[in-house]
Length: 111
Length: 115
Image (cartoon, rainbow over all chains, first blue to last red; front, side, top):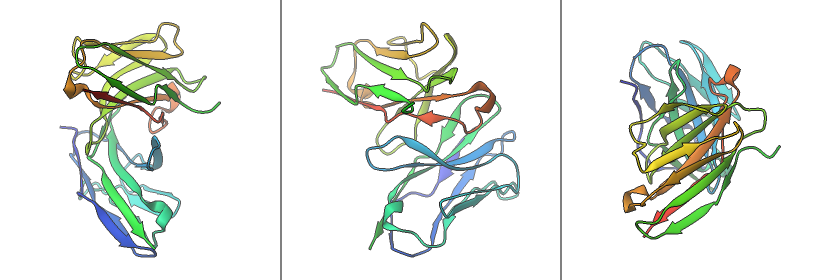
């Protein structure tokens, strides 16, 4: 299939803590992988992407590495800020045009 | 260009009524997508246009749903005889054909509540 599974939230962290949000995908085809972020009251925004195995996407201090051997694309950030509070969605896209999103992980960062 | 614009932002309607949403994509984007997002879930693909042609439709798009993009610019999504299960956030996105891999820009969505 074309599913994406991400860790359930909500996740609550203190400012400057290390963040990991797990994401795994079904190994059908050679998808591109993405993390999208949705801030309160706003639309989805592309956070980072990786289009092939071993690629690392990075943006705003967030990183994720496309690992084919474990079919994973875990999101990490070394030191979270209050402004990172949002819902994070892992997604895959095949050579077609559809995105398949995970269920989202809500992150709250407290000062 | 202010990005992808969706109207209205919120819509409350009584069960059985028809509703129509509008999406204005980024002007140079020739691809336009509709997704639906229910509470606690990720967005689910509904349909996609390339210019004015509707090229893919999800099985989620029942016969009560119809989408159009008559001039290859803005799009409308109409839901006839709304049901409570239609309550969701309806998201529109657009992209350039050549950069569709991750090149989506999403709008802020239209939140539909059917009472």
